[in-house]
Image (cartoon, rainbow, N blue to C red; front, side, top):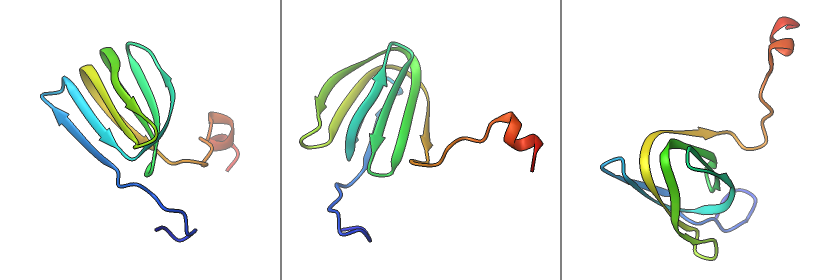
Length: 92
């Protein structure tokens, strides 16, 4: 359990030859198309970029997701932290 006494699921990512990703600890899918899959995981937001991406397995009950296609990049984002735009950078 984490510090808020909320039970979390383990989060793992397995990438097989950049063609298949198996993820655990996924809370929600916030959006997807053939170039981008956006997920909310136990470790924050996760954006997967590539070509021909599609979700072949989705079980939010267990937190398991499988994404297939050409995976080019993945990036975690910090949940709840607004991104700083150019205006906020100018007025520091």
